[in-house]
Length: 206
Image 1: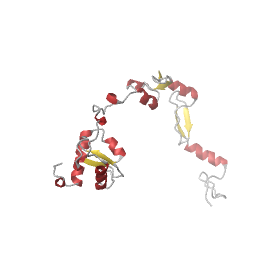
Image 2: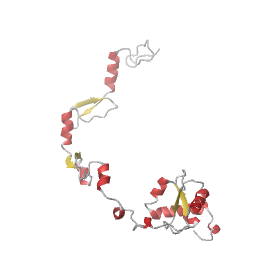
Image 3: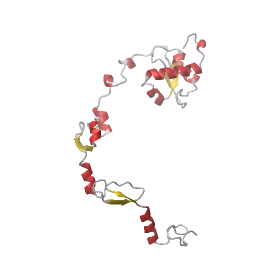
Image 4: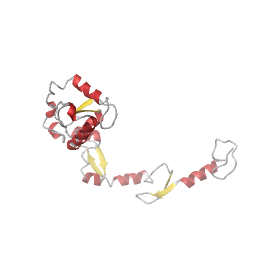
């Protein structure tokens, strides 16, 4: 048998927290957060779990007037955006979906464009048995994050260089990361391959 958390009386039902409805209302009223409406300054009382900013719908719509009224360049939908966001250039599209559809990042428009070298064919030496040998050497483990990996990556980004010391196993996620900051990843993976294998086994210096 417990006690009421408001007045301290003993409770008959141990599952309850209050002895009556009045104690419950008084307890919750003391826990409520009181602050001012950001528009009119009127006292605003709400539960701690809520974070209200306006005392009424009128104040909410008044706050939206301070935002910039815009129209999406792709779908034509009208929307509101903060003036500071518009000044930073974030006022062209109403959502990320429209932004991704409206901005062409394919081919030469992509910051990772390297002149279309991804379309070049792999040499005949880069076959299934070679890639399987690299995966087994690295125990099907991504050399960056340590998770399961089955992608054979060229450390110097030259797909024609199929020496074993130039190939390493990565997972799909880490392989996508290596498309950015290539000089940094080349240095990191070169140090990792030096640690994993002995260069003299292949007759070349890494």
